[in-house]
Amino acid sequence: MTTPRKVRWLIAHEPQELFVRTARAFSQELEKRIPGQIAIEIVTVPEYIKEHEGSKNLQTILDENLDKQGVAVEALFDALRDDIQMSQTQVSVVGYKDRAFHALDLPFLFDNHEHVSRVLEGPIGEEICANLEKVSDVKGLAFTYSGGYRVVGSNHKIEDLADLASQKVIVSNRGPRADTFESVGVEPVVVSPHLWGGYDTVPEGGAANAIETTYLRFKGTHILKTNHSIFMTTILTNKAFWESLTAEQQTAFEESAKITARIERQWAIADAEKFEQDALANGIEITELSEEDTKTMKHKSRYTYLKFDAENNRSDLIKRIRLS
Image 1 (cartoon, rainbow, N blue to C red):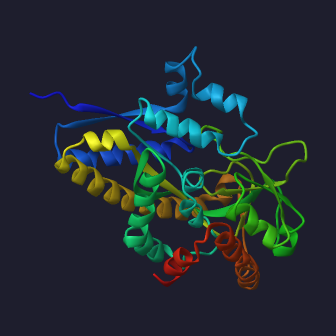
Image 2: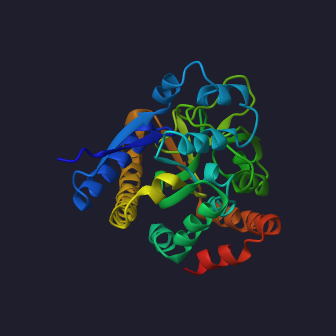
């Protein structure tokens, strides 16, 4: 009997359980298609760091460069070039390699979850993944949520858009996410994206008093439900590893990734619904942005489309997504 080929999947972000269940679901789907050929080994960042103690490893890179944008990207991509075959991380992180991924962070880009599926599972999603291969050693396989809609978390109640404008809100990178808040008069406090930073909390000390987050990532007491964009992630694979697979195995990987991504997005939707149902019992107050304020935020934040296009020449991509 042939020994299954080991494939290491790095869990590259919190909440860990969301990423672990995705990797396990992928493994199950793959086993249905090519039984006994591949064994997925799940590796967390702390485990990976421990394996590389004493060298210029992932943790050293992160510790020495916490104030520099894009460092987590290089750390992750280095791992994928080295001894990691698969991972799953934010589109905002992958966007440092290909700005098309940052387009998916634009505010109010998608009308609903069905619209998201049409884009991500159709020609546009395939095109974005294919372009990543041209500029990196990594291949994109499918798009997941791992958190769902973005909201604003705080430890005090934020009543409305006018109240939000008086806050300093943490965002994890520059680009569409910071621009979205600036468009409605909010001061964004930009921090570098990281691979292993725990859950989102509002820091003590006054540097900021709110944070862009999702239901499942936030640890705090109040949420302003803005639903201004969707926290998307991408299932990635090492391109050299990919090219070592047989045609049958590549097909199995592609099919498994797409099915797993669809399942994961449904899980995220269900998780968000349960979070809302249990919020009060868990000591969390959710304030929904009014229809009028949502309309205002949508209108003002559209300037981010113009800015993104001016910087990246991506107007055709944005238009195609909107019309899909």
